[in-house]
Image (tube, rainbow, N blue to C red; front, side, top):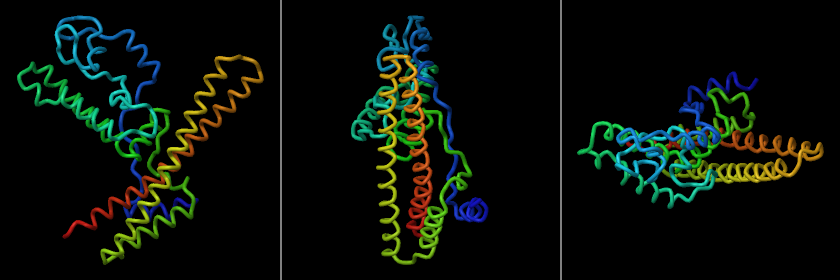
Length: 267
């Protein structure tokens, strides 16, 4: 396989994509069940405390509640679960949430609320950073669909792409002038934009097929419609695999972008 020598060179040059870390989000069904069985307020015992007031405060005693482990980043940041995100709206939501839960506002509260505010603030920061950048947003969407990109994915990449990555990396290592650096940076930026657009289309096609699948599922259970449903499911998986492959490529270029930043730092 192509993974032998090329894989070793990519590891040495630092271009091998890192694995996706983090907890696997709970399913929508799990979140729904959690909502129907919402816990009581830890402070006053009122039912359903964490499910009101942005999901943070008990409506009765106003005590800060613990983070909801079933809530995904899109829900937390009030965004549609999609690859395209309104980043201005995302930033506004981030600032709004930090004004609610930042630890600086809980210095005079109980130790329990101080601990909860730390957890909430960290969660909001993680959600914001994840959804702000196209690459991390796409990887997170894949996780919500049960897909991850593990380490050692070079065997699945085509030889031409890996050669392109190695050539760009070599040119970067040899670049001595600001003009040469800018040229490489421009090439990588264009590649990332093209891949980002392709990933967006793949996720949009997947969302469209999900809607068609639900309509077919609700319409009938005939053999004809069952066959159509199976085709839609197969196509949906294909769209996700396309997104996965392109996101893997984006990670290679992201590693090069980091190398460019480091090379710009004066010694």
